[in-house]
Image (cartoon, rainbow, N blue to C red; front, side, top):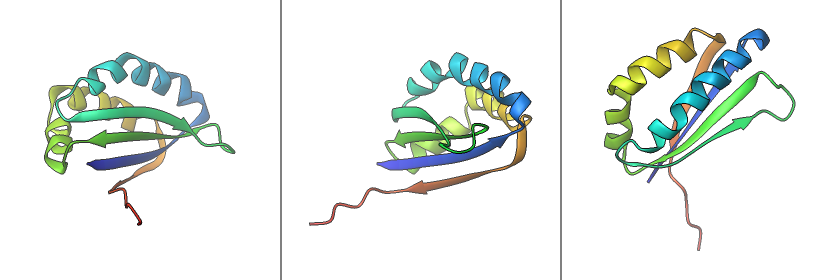
Length: 97
């Protein structure tokens, strides 16, 4: 399982446009092969900063989404709203026994 976090800072006036993009695409993203989970987080102190948190079956599944027609529409529209470049990283959960 690959966990993907993408932290995005928007110009405050662009937040409604981003939320509409997310609202209209979230179900389609969740239906992508290999996507097991997707949610949106808002920074507790900065209302114009959001993170997507998603779980993917594998890096290959994430990369297949990133090569999809859906991503090709959603990401450029979202990226155009950024105040600063996004920060994205992938992690694995660690089970400490």
